[in-house]
Length: 235
Ligand code: ADP
Image (tube, rainbow, N blue to C red):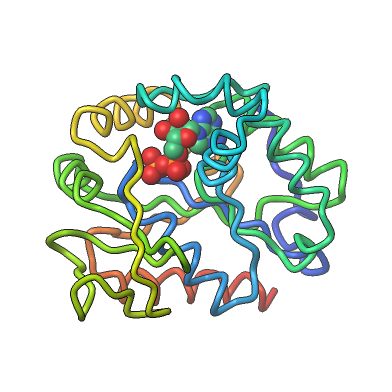
C-alpha cells in the first residue's frame, strides 16, 4: 500500500476527476460507468474490456490473459498495468476517467497512485458498490450485451422490450461473456474478496472512499453516483 494522500490531492479542482468503481462481478460497475460517461463526460476505462479486446485480437498480452480470465482468476499486474498505462497516455482521458475494474490488487492501487502523482493528479473518489454475494452470482449468470452498442441486459432482470432487439440502438446481435457462468462467477467473487476488497480500506485511509448500496435499482444507483461525481466536479 502507498502513503497517505496529501491535501492538495483531495481537492484537485484543476485536474480532471479520477473516479474508481469498486465492487464484485455483477455489482453494476460497467452499467454505471457507461451512465457516468454519458451524463458527466467522463471516459470509461474498463480493464476487463481492454483485456477482452486483447484476447480477441490475439496479442501476446491477450494470449497470456485468456486462460486466467476463463478460470475466473486475475490477470498479472504486469499485463494489466501495461494495458492501462498505454490507455491513460491517450489525450481523451484529459476529460476525466471512471476506472471500471481497476485497480484490483494492492500492487495495481500503488501503481495507480504513483502514475497519478507523476501527472499531478489523484483519485477523486473510490466508490464501493455494496451488494449481496448470492445475488451477484444470479446477476452475472444471466447477463448479455448488445453486440452493436454494448447496452447490458439480463435474462430475468432486464429483458429487451422487444425480443431480440436492443432498446437502445435497435441492434439484433447479442453477446454473452465466456466467464459469465455460475461456476466462474464464484471464482471471480473469491478473487474479489481475497484481492480487491482490501483496497476499500486503502481508499478509506486516503479519505476518498464512498459506499453506495448497489442492490437498489439501476436508476437509483445511477442517481447516487451522479451526485457523488457532481460534488467532485464542483470542487
Ligand atoms: P467483472 O464483471 O468480473 O468485474 P471485468 O470485465 O471487469 O468483469 O473483468 C473480467 C476479467 O478480466 C476478470 O475476471 C479478470 O480475469 C480480468 N481483469 C479485468 N480487470 C483486471 C485487473 N485490473 N486485474 C487483473 N485482472 C483483471
